[in-house]
Image (cartoon, rainbow, N blue to C red):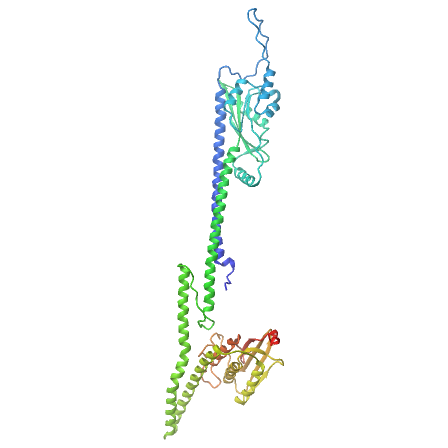
Length: 555
């Protein structure tokens, strides 16, 4: 099972690396921002060029008078031969121009300051652009020409409104705009014209309070000879510019979002599939070899031809070699015990023949030592065969439910006779201790524990056996006084390992605890060893699960 926290996992690293895809929309943002800047600069250049062109068109034109009209003087009396020409009516011309103006609301708001010149407005109407308004203001502040109109952009909703707001935000900060009513901006225009009338060409950005669109106003002086006689002011909205920026932003946003989602999803899917393959390989590796180093499973081959597939093949081959080696080791003890019995029997019979012959007392001493060595070798062969037979028995045995307390109690009675005069005490609960397993195997395990305790117990001490029920488990402990265990007991229950000398000073064979561990693990239990609290001896503890009460009632 994969217990790696998510923040340290490969998936988290892939997700973190996938966030680099955010550079795609970031680059789109930079592109749109720079595009908006270039569009604004182009808009300014076009508007200023339009103002200069209109000013040049109105300069030094014969018959074009931009000064204030002088008061009307009565014409001379016509001769009798020529009919009198009708007198010009300035007020009538203004009213007619007012109704014919492109932006009647602005013209009407000017009042008496709107003194149109038909020739001027005819020139203005020829070159006025869409979403633009052109003013011509003379030196006396009168509006002599007005053409074109600027209308408020319609309110947008939904995605268009969001993108328009984003574009507006992108454009903001790149201009120094004065927030006014972009439609009714006559006061700002008149203020600009005053600066132009003194020879100062000037530009000004104005925006609406609701940011629906902006207006660039460019003012240029009109020269006649060496004199400035009027000013032309060209107002042009940025609706076209915003439309271009909005379309660019739409394309960039849609493409960036789609690319980010697709790439991010692909990377996340790839990371999870990769982690899934690695996790399955880890699970197979966990169950392929048990805690004792025995090969108990196989490694499934990972699909594909990548490094993970190669790793799975390598691990599968390694587990197969481990299984073959384990099989060799498991059969080695049986083979050795079988092969060694005949030489040991020959040596023993030879020693017996030597003992029966005429031997001196000095020679008998050496024969006794040889007998002792042969006896120990025979015990070793028997225990090796016993361990092998036990493993084979546990693999094919049929389990049953039995009372552990009753089995231990019966064994203790036999130990008191077998190990007399060794004192053995038993403490057990009053109720039954029902477990699932093999009673004979439990008795064999207890034989090894008691033999180990007797071998290491100090003379005249008491071996204490205790059974206790707690939290659904039964705990069996065997304690004896004697030499303590060293600090490192990791190999205590391995085969052919002994880390202490017995009470008689001989080398311990180290097979009893290994057999006890095999039996405890067969019963889903755990075995451990530790020194007593006062350091006077050793206690070995076996914890096994009890049969649940509901299952007992079911029987």
